[in-house]
Structure formats: C-alpha cells, structure tokens
Amino acid sequence: MLRPAAREAYLEASTLHGNPSSTHAAGRSVRAVLDSALEEIASLLDVPRSWLLLTSGGTEADNLALRAVPQALRAADPSRTAVAVAATDHPAVLATARSLAVPAGGTGADGTGADGFAVRELGVDARGVLDPAGVAAALEDRAVGLLSAALVNNETGAVQDLAALGEAARAHGTLLHTDAVQAVGHIPLPRRGEVDLMSLSGHKLGAPVGVGVLVARPGVPFAPLSTGGGQQRDIRSGTLDAPHAAAFAAALRETLAEAEETSARLAALTARLRAGIAAIDPTARFTLPEDAPRAGHILHLLFPGAHADSLLFLLDERGVDCSAGSACSAGVLQASPVLAAMGVDEVAARGALRLSLGWTSTEQDVEIFLAALPEALERARAVGALMR
Image 1: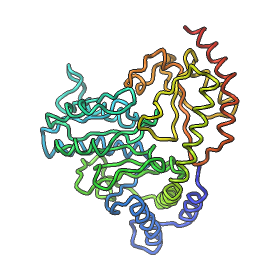
Image 2: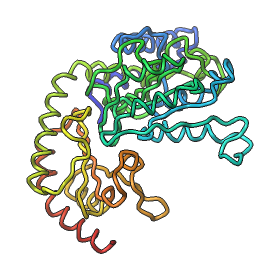
Image 3: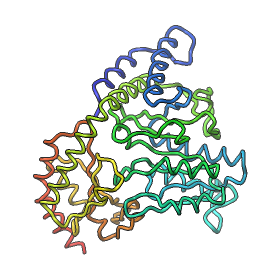
C-alpha cells in the first residue's frame, strides 16, 4: 500500500517533464528533484550519495550484485571462479546465482562449463541461520568472489549475523552482499562498511512498485551488463526516474522515522497472533522459536495435516491475505526450498503458512484472522486427509 507522502511526492514530481540528464531548463528542473531524492536517500541510509544505484526494484538490484559483480571480480582475478549464497535466500538471489553456473554455450558434464561459475549454496540450521563452519569451508580456497545472504529471510523472518559474515568474507578477500528488502524499518540495517552491497525495494516501504536501490561501495567492480548513455557509473544506463526516486525517498523517510514505534506495535500484534494460534490449535508448530534471531513482523508456522493451498483460499475468502511455504509447479505441490534447507520434512511443509505484518496492520486484522482460522483449518485438514 502506498504511503500518502510517497504518493504525493510521486505525483508532484510526475508533473515535470524533461530528461534529468539534459542541460535545458526542463531537464534541470527534473534533475533537481532527482538530486534532492538521492541526497535524502543517501543521508537516511548513512552512506555517500555516490554509493546509490537506482533500480526497478529488489530483484534487479540482486541481479546486478549477483551477476555483474562476480564477472568483474573474475575478470580482475581469474581465480575468483565461485559465488556463495545462503540456501534459504530469495529466488532473486538463488536463481541468479544458479544461472551463473550455466555458460552461454550450454552445460558441461558437471553442470558448468568454461564460462560458468561454481555456485556454493550454504546450509543453515533449524533456525534458518547460516552455519559458520560451512561459511568458512566455502570461503577457504579463496575462489569465492561474492558471498550473499539476506539480512531477513522473506519467508520465515530469520535474521543473519552480517557482522560475522562480513568479517569472514573480508578474511578471504570476498565481497559481501545482502538482500535487505525485508529488513528496512524492522531491524537495524548494517553499518557503513559492514557489507559491500545491499539491495532495497520501494514497495516494501510504501513506495510504488517499480523502484529500488542497490547500495554499492565505489570500489566494487561491475561488469557491463547493458550499455547506453553511461548513467549511474556506467553500471545501469538509461533515463533516470525522478518521480519514483522522490517517492522512494519519502517512503524511506517515514519508514525510518516510525521504525521504533512500528516495530514495537508489530511485535505486540505478532505476540497476539502466536497466543491466539496456540489456543486455537495446540498442535501448530512455529517454525522459528521465540528466542531465535528473527524479525518481529513475519510469523511462519506449520499446521499438521492441513492442505496449504486450501487454507490460503479459505482464509482469502474471509479477507485474510497470507501466503504459504510451498509452491505449485506443473500441478505438483512442492515443499518450500527454504523449509527443506532448514530440515523441515516435506509432509510437515505442506501445512505451512506465512503471516507478514506491515505499517498498515492493525489489531482488527489480527482478530479477523483468528476468527477465520478455526473453520479454515478444519476444512483444509479435511482436504489434506483426502490427498494423503
């Protein structure tokens, strides 16, 4: 949902015409809006403005980091032939990393080729946290140019220790990227210099869909993935989008200003959800224990015997928007890769449910969900019993 301030900033900037790279008066007026937005975003993130690359969202930011940076690192040092990613990361990271293993001319017998990268997917424990020993082993031979791990997992809310990961990466000359899309306004972002690259997405903050930011230190190399007018350090050419940048700045400003109050409010709502769910169904399993490192706005749980797709449909009928930890592919119900990486068996994963709260969430939303859950669970378990 758009924040009013973001909507107003977008509409005001969209009344201007001109290319912000042009030198005529119209272009300069748009450039002034763009410059102001970028300066504010940089100030709010406590980084120099030169570190910012505007993107179309978190997915593009992840693609730039995972695709362009490893290629540039390998061009500078041919021994950097691998990338490492958390096995629980968002598909924008995992799918991009996996695509690097496939050379342009096809695959070799081992799934890679002369132009492909070795992709090292790092295991996590039952709390969704990366295993330090596994990270160290993956980096030991110094072949990994880039390590990527989401600050907050988009499915479970598990939080990674970026300070420790950064220390491990630097010891082996490896750069660290984090997808922080789910973190902004919920937990503190990494301090300047703690990571080398960080992806953010506007729509998670209340900005319009279609804008994001990749924060990248100036020393991070990028291979040219597209060419054009050379905007944004020759990394992402194209006419810059001042209205979306202005909306992003406005949404980020409000998100960070309200972060403390919002986090406390959402933590209280999540606690109410946990208590209410436990009372309705004592067999429900919360995927992350309360003492696990996690963000307070995501609640992930498993309902034994429930058919997840049916549960989603039944809750949707009652006005509850939520998601499951599974996906249908070619008509076959598949367990969530995130849950599989955490050691959750496929049968248990079939009853997964993810509840995500945001700045618009209210006590009434919680009550609507808890009122709808008993009947939805009963019917979803009936479907589950038929499908065994």
